[in-house]
Amino acid sequence: MQSYNPSDLAGGVVALLADVSRQHQRRWDAALKAFEAKEGNGTLAADYLWAPPGLAPPTPPASTHVGDEDGGRGGATRPDVPRPLPDSCIVCFLNVGSASVPGDAAVVEEWATATDGFVKLRLGKGRPYSFAEYSSVQAARAALLRLVGRRLPSPAGGRPTMRALLATPAVAVPFPDVDVLTDAAEIMHQVPGLFVVPELVSPEEETELLARVEEYPWVELSVRKVQHHGFAFNYDVNEVSRATQPPLPPWTDALLHRFCSLPDLPPGTPAYNQLTVNHYPPGTGIPPHTDTHSGFGDSVLIVSLGGPAVMEFRTLLPASTAATVAAAVPPDDLPGLPPADPLAPPTSEFRTVHVLLAPRTAVEMHGEARFGWEHGIRARAGDVVDGRLVPRRPRTSLTFRRIREPPPSPAESVPGTESVPPPPPPRCDCAYRWICDARLPGGALPDRFRSPELTVNRHGVARNGHAL
Image (tube, rainbow, N blue to C red; front, side, top):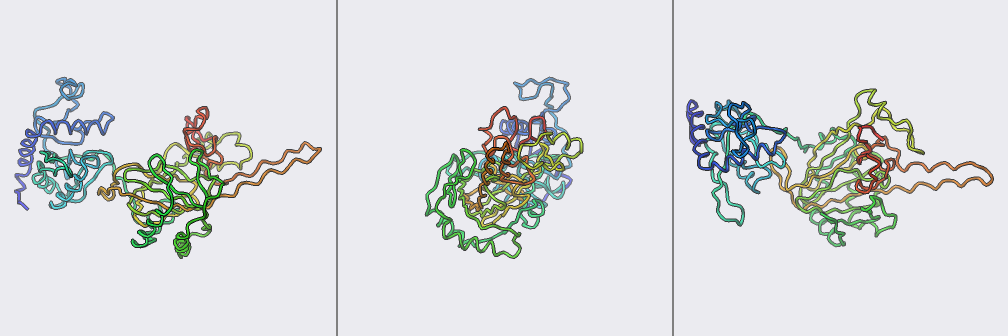
């Protein structure tokens, strides 16, 4: 590595960035505007980034008005002399991020890792820029001198380009770290009722399972394809079809026996009688949801095969004051249902936990995780885990459930009397009535089929924030 005199680092950075900015002026200015547009809410690049002379971001003092046609904001100025170089340990790569040219982030991370004092690369979701953190100001400035202006590789199969890495000191990172949990014990601590088993099957067994799955016909949905065994699921009405399907394939016997024989398995794991196989091409996902309470029982088991993905678990936070609790509980409960738990009505705020589903991982949801939390996977090309971009690959999930038995029919009225038979008991008696399709107006119907007069979201939370 080339050595630098610490007393010359600041001057060297200013001179080199000024030179690179002259060579790539239009790209640099476009990158600054893209930064402001992506962060939104009136964010100024000057709040976070330093830029060389001639490209300094607009600053709030309005001594000289700069119109939009000049690339500035109304009432802002674009000074000829930038602010002093900040004493910062952060470097922003303005044109490389999770949403930039595929492969760039991995290349730049490799370059940054080779510089002294590199700590980590932070990639914001959906952002074409990223931030490298260093152990000292001197290390960050020395890295800038090595990295800024380096020629980025041409896209695979594309023509050679003149793309250069645009880098500058940053005083802060505009987005928070999103911690993706990878440790099974920590995951189970954060999401009560979630049981995680890494490496339930070996890589060889995974290959065999994926081959067995392909022996059965698929049903094509909009972005993924599915198989149903035991019982089918009707996506038009979000309900289990009571028409029996062929039974679970024989190859599931050994898999379920292995899982159900685990020594730490929570009690009450049922004999699963329904299997849904989902195949997700790279870049696809599934919206946040709970498996219907009315259709399925107390345990849902997912075995993840193929590529990794980050699954988000989220739950509505409870109301924090007695007044909110009282306002959230309606005076008239739905007929035939047990009263709601008055101690935990929902708000409109979520608590979200991000969990890495590594290949061959099994997760079982019971209790709170099963009934009180939603789970889903965002549709995107990759996930940021520990500051690294993990590209999505084709993923297949095996989801095992046990269907609920239908409620008994009401007793017939006694002839000659006016007695009214009691209503059938609810098909779900969980404590999470705001998310329970057995209790929500509209039942298990997807949101797009619910009556607009209900004015509730999928959790049964009305627009005024009260639970129904």
